[in-house]
Image 1 (cartoon, rainbow, N blue to C red):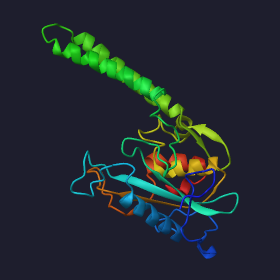
Image 2: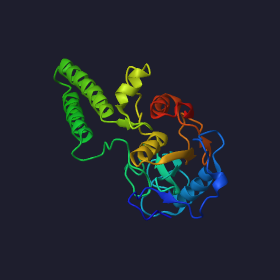
Image 3: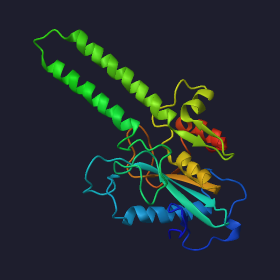
Length: 258
């Protein structure tokens, strides 16, 4: 059940956990902590029964829309009042959105109407429309103009991506903050990989630190059909991805978790 406290994302267990199940140190291994297994069972039951939103995981024969499996995560935490519960998150977007009452918010909300992403995408759309118009005018020698627009599109897209990463401000367990760009460049990357900061693990830890929770155990599982590029199995547990998550988790204080 959802806790009757200020943080609506904190969920208490249906039954109070036995003290021997509560880990003394943070756990995120191949074998999930028993409390994580309980939290995952509750979350999976919610995914199977909820009617608030529609997302085609590819599990039903009559599903509508593109099939997109999804990685979910749960983080068992202890509050300042010594309450034990858990947080839930998904990677990327769910049903075309990134904010739901049941899941912690993203580190950076790129879907805000007045945000930099919306403005940046509008400019990219404008450039694409110009390219389409010129391409249809086949009787005019406009090759150079089209190439100039394509170069402008590429430059704008790269600048937008960097601006987005600058707005991903990550907090660690010591209360320090740093942008995603700084984290990855200090880890030896030229720039963060696409999708960095959107995975479940970093989102869960971010929310825990912002609310002064003590992380106890983390587990991530795949829900739905696997994309052709990966071999994830429905309902199976997996570690955080190395390329996108390891530098972030290391900065957050849990570098061995990826």
